[in-house]
Amino acid sequence: MMTLSFLEETWGGLTWTPWYTFDEIMKDKHFIPTLPGVYRIKPKGQNKLMYIGQTGRNLRERVTDLIRNTVKEEMPFNDPHTAGPSLWSWRDAEGWEFECSVSTVDLTKNSREGLECFLLWSYRLETGQSTVCNHGRFHQDYEKSRGRKSGFRGGKLQDSVPRNPSWGESFPPLHVQGTPLSLNFMGFPWSNFIGANQLSDVPLQKGVYRIKGLKTNTLLYIGQSNQLNNRLRQHTRKNWGQEVNFSYCIIENAKDYHLKEIENDLIGAYYATENSVPTFQFKNLKEGRL
Image (cartoon, rainbow, N blue to C red; front, top):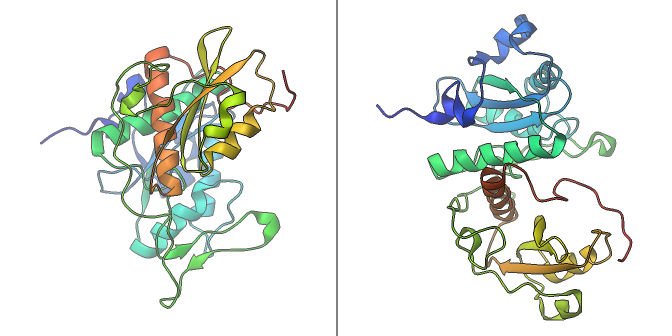
């Protein structure tokens, strides 16, 4: 029988704890350490992952808070944990119990989020599908709760209304090809890098994009958007510390979660080759033209 690496205690070069059920964790919280790290969740008795996450504060606090939200009678709000409503919906629909395994890591915030992308990409490469609850994917028969301030709780959809579009087949996982700055990076037909004065040629279509610093000749950011033209124009108003160029790739007929899957694979592959993420990935840049 083939061993599935994403279930192993050495997956991704990390040291993971054994798998503990949600009930076991809540009975003895010491199974989960009180350090920053990454965590993975699977249905009990099944060989697939539901969710991969990370926290810079306290794994025990993060995981137990997620468990409390997942087992509530009503679908939890979308905060403080965006995975809560999704795990709740699958538990409600299928009656699944869940198990969790964690790994402590001593990394900066950016590197820790890059590691999360790498693990998500690795899972996609091994299985051909994304984890069930990452990238905005959601059970087709349920509507997701919004933030706590909205007061809106989701739940099961009536048979007479359309299904939730945030479910379906994953975009095929991307395989390593080219380099982060090449025009065939990860097998996509990227545009040439262009300056801000050429953005009028960029279409209002869905796709992914890269931002390169001209002074450092390095990748500064990877992103995705439903409207490439508008998004890239927004980026020209941010202070990158140097002049920048843009390269993009149109992804026709992509669902929103497809764009997030692709963006994740690009960042995960960058992390795998560079052991870091692009300079401004996961940072909020202030506006201010250079």
